[in-house]
Image (cartoon, rainbow, N blue to C red; front, side, top):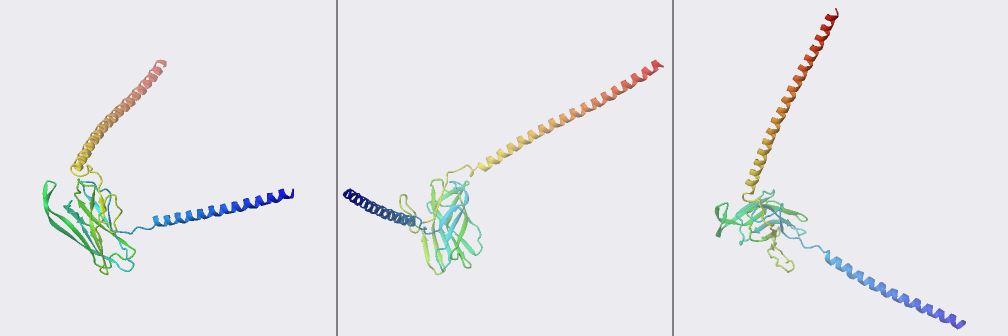
Length: 272
C-alpha cells in the first residue's frame, strides 16, 4: 500500500510539472504572436506622407467641364509654403482654365502654342494653358495647415481615364519639392507622386444636353399650362352649371310657395 501511494504521488507531481511546462510554452508562443501582430499593426497604421493632390468638386466627366481643387499640405515644422506651380499635361491640352481668386495669393496663367490645334464648339484653338502658378503675398501656408487652389477646367479629354499634373511646391526657406512622379500600374506609389485627376464616363450634360433639357422643360411647361387651362375651363363650366342650378332651384321654391299661398287664399274664399 505504501509503495502504491508513493507511485501515485510521483505520477501526480510529474503530470503537474509537465502541465506547467506546456502552459509556459503556450504562453511564450502567444506572447511572441502578439508581439508580431502588434508590429504589423504599427507598420500598417503608420501615416502616409501627405502630398499635393487634385480632386474634382463633384464629377469630372470626359468631354465636360469641372471645377478641380489642388490640395497642398505643409509638411514642414518651421517653414511655410509660399509658391505652387502646376504643369498641365501636354498630351491632353485644356483650352479653358480659369482660376478662382484666393486671398493672400497672386495667380499667373501661362499659355503656349499648340503643335496641333484643338476644335472647341466649332472653333479652332491654337493655344492652351500649360502652367498655373500661385505665389503667396504674405505668410503662405503655415506649418500644420493646408490650402486648396480651385480651377475651372475643360473641355476634359474623352480618350483617357485620368490626367496627371506635375506640381512643384516651394517653401519659405527656398526648399523645392517636385511632385512629378507618375505612378505606374502594378507598382507601389512613388516617393513624390504627381497629382492625378480621375475622369468618369462621359455624360449628356455637355454639348446639346442643356438645350434638350430646356426644350423638354418648356414642353412640359406648355403641357402643364394646357392642362391648367382645360382644368380652369372645366371649373368655370362646373361653376356656371352650379349657379344655374341654384337659380332654378330658388325660382322653383318661389313658384311653389306662391302656389301654396294661392291655394290657401282660394280655399278661404270658398269657405266664406
